[in-house]
Length: 312
Image (cartoon, rainbow, N blue to C red; front, side):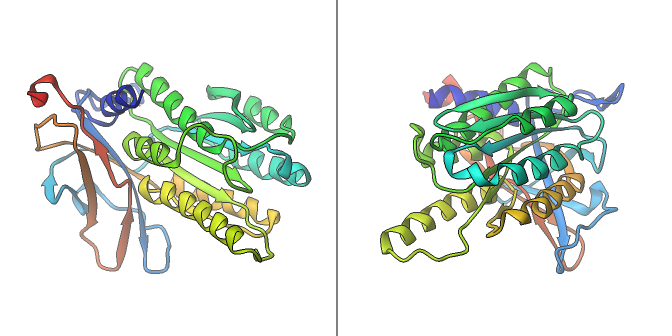
């Protein structure tokens, strides 16, 4: 299964630009490496107004030629994952309000899906432009059962890859926002497997992990929660997103608002790699800005497909 996922991911992540803006839709071939970039100043304020010449992209330390650039008008596919385990019973009303507000800020041309997390992942609203339908699906969620968090993220990534492949090369930004109040309890997928697929897919994963305001007493509990925090931070960092650890459910609306602002301030870049080898390696991506006192954030890299010739 891992081999199939890696191969599919590489087809999605790599591509040569064959056409630019065609009837309001950006399209690419199969060799374009797509990179979404967040640019902030030293005060964590978004930096707007940059142009293509301000960006330098490096793959494994070698500068690449940027062939696609957009500061706006690149549509978004967003998956909202909600923990519906029994521990969320007293939080669902606030979760509904915050998640509905989040979905309601999507723009025309964007698409949204809703996935509930219990002992298994359940798609409550398929990916489409029906924001009203997505909000109704959110409001219908109820709590009960365990938390198959890794399974839910894994299957969501796979589904978003399939949808992207069926889009015929249309360039769209992809993001996942996942809310949970605890650790994975029932998944068959391991964290290492999930992180590997997430790093390859190029989908930004924003993680929101509700934490208890009361510290754990037992050492085993402290270790347990630190492992969960590491998992949430790693998923966000490797995919160019952010992780949040609120201690109050009332903070959710503000966090969703921050994610909305960030998704609205992304720069979309694309390049054709100067490295022609199809050897199955993981290639690191670095984006620099020709401006003082600015920082960039993007995904860590992408996986290259391995051809039969490379196997010889």
